[in-house]
Image 1 (cartoon, rainbow, N blue to C red):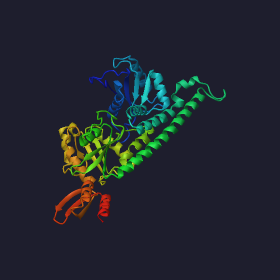
Image 2: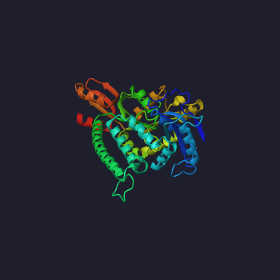
Image 3: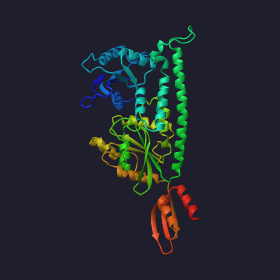
Image 4: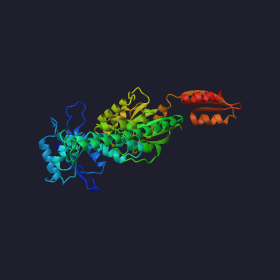
Amino acid sequence: MSADRANEGNGNERPAGGDFCLVIHPDLDRNTPHARAPEAALQEGVGLTQAINLEVLHSEIIRVNKPKPATLIGGGAVDRIAKLVAGDSDICETCDVVIVNTPLTPIQQRNLERAWQCKVIDRTGLILEIFGARAQTKEGRLQVDLAALSYQRSRLVRSWTHLERQRGGAGFMGGPGETQIENDRRQIDQRITRLKRELSDVKRTRNLHRQARKRVPYPIVALVGYTNAGKSTLFNRLTAANVVARDQLFATLDPTMRKMVLPSGKPVILSDTVGFVSDLPHELVNAFHATLEEVMAADLIVHVRDVSHPDTQAQKTDVLTVLQDLGVDTSENNPGFVEVLNKSDLLAPDQLDFYESRSANGLKSPYLASAITGAGCQHLAGIFDRLVTANFEEIQLTLKHQDGATLAWVYEHGDVVARHDKLAAIELTVRMEIADAERLRRRIS
C-alpha cells in the first residue's frame, strides 16, 4: 500500500468552498493483461480531482483481492480511511470529501458515506462533475445534464436516504419512500425526455452546419487524443489561436475550429476536440461520441499522444478503442490517420534518441513534436499539407488572358504547381480536390 501527500509543495490554497479531500484508488485490475499501472491510475485520479478545485490532502492505493459487495474495499481499509477522514492521524487534516477512483454501486457509495461520515464521489460522479463545470456550448450542457440525470436515476432507490422519511403505497404493500421515489423518478424521466428532444434539435442544427462546411473547399484536420496530451497547445501553435490550454485534465470539452494555412498556401480547418479518458462512465459515452461526430467528417485525423507520460501506451489503446467504435480506420495503411508524439521536450536524452530513430525519415507516422517549444511543428504542417492533398487531381489547362474570373477561381480552390504566361494564353498545372476539378471542367466547358 502506498500513501503520499498529493499536494505537498504545490502552493495550493484551500478552495473557496473549503473542501479538503482524500483520493483512493482501489487496485482491482493488477492481474488483468495490459492493465494500467496503479500508480499512474492514482495520479490520474488526483488530476481529475484537482480539475474541480478540490484540495487533495492525501492519496493512496488500496489493494483489493476480492471486492466486497457492500463497500468494495475491505473492512480494515474502511476503518483506517474513517480515521483519516476524521483527522485522527498524523497523515492529514479533517476531510470533507473522499474520491474513490473507480465506479461504485449506489449501495457501496451509501455504505461508505455512512462509515466515513462525509461525501463520497466515485469516478463516474467525478467526471460528470468536471464535464458539468466545463461544458460551454448548449449541446455540451444538454449532454452533461442528460448524463447526470441518467446517473441519478440509477441511484434513487439505494442512495437517497431522505426518501425513508416518506411512507407510500396503500399502507400495506408500499415500503418507506415508495411514493416519493416514484414521484422523483417520474420527474427525472420527464426531464430526460425534454433534454433528448432539445438535443435532437441541436444535433439537427449541427448537421446543417456540417453540410454547409462541405460546400466550402476547406479540408478538415481533427486533433484527437487522451486528455492533457497537449492538443490545445498544439492547436494554438499551428493556428496562432488563443484557446484555453492548461496542464489540466479536461481543459477542453467543446470542439473549437480555426483556419490554418498550410506551407503550400492551402487553407484547412483545424479542429480541437475533447480529450479521451479511460473507464469513461457509460452515462457519458453517448454524449462523448456525439461530441466527436466532428471527427467523423474530418479529412485527416491526428492522434496526439503525450509521449512523456509513463502510461502513454495504455492511453493510446484507450483512444484507439473509442475511435474504432466510431468506425475510424486507425491502421497504419490509412493515410487519413496519423500519430503525433507530443511533449518531446520532456523526454530523457536516451528516450529522445529512441523515438527519433523510429521516425528518422520524417515521412512516416509517428511524428515527434513539442507544442511548447515548437520543435517539429513546421515539419508537421508540411506532413498535413502532403496528406491532405494526397488524393488531389493534377490538371493541365489553358486560359485566355481575359478570363480573369476563372484564373482567380483556380488560385482560390487549387494549388498552382506551374504557370507559363504566353502571348496567346496562360498555361497552368493545378492540383485540387477531385470535386473541385469536376467543377473546373464544367466551368471552362
